[in-house]
Amino acid sequence: MRILKWPNPALTAVASPIESVDDSVRATAEEMLMAMAESRGLGLAGPQVGYGKRLICVNVTPGSPEGERVYVNPEIVGREGEVTAEEGCLSLPGVNGKVTRAAKVTVRATDLKGEPLTLFAEGLLSRVLQHEIDHLDGVLITQRFSAIDKAANARSLRELEKTSRTPTASRR
Ligand SMILES: [Zn+2]
Image (tube, rainbow, N blue to C red; front, side, top):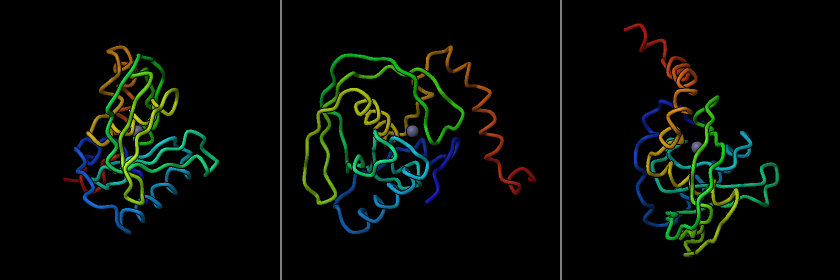
């Protein structure tokens, strides 16, 4: 499973809800967990692997599989406070900037057995959940950067846009 990089259009599309948690969803989740672990990511969302469904994986202790969690159709139903911190993204290598997010979130989701759950998160987990749920809405960190951070990352973004061009496309 390959992690898509900017400017792949899959990254800016809105993901659709998962109707039922079946074996194909569980198999996709398993592959996503492996891809996330391989890249030592803290989180991975369906659109980042070309899966246009509302599925996210998180692990705020990369390297230890016991921290792995999968959420189906996650939705933020409560927010509290505000905190700004530096973020990066597996789909935006070389791009980093400050993002302001809610300090604490309440998330409603479904687990891989199809059971509903409510999660209260703060700290890094809260940030990662908000980042991954943003992906489901086609929102990337660059959209949340300040003008200064946008300018600071313009060159890295242009580089990504250049390397993404296939030889076939540039020959036209
Ligand atoms: Zn990301």
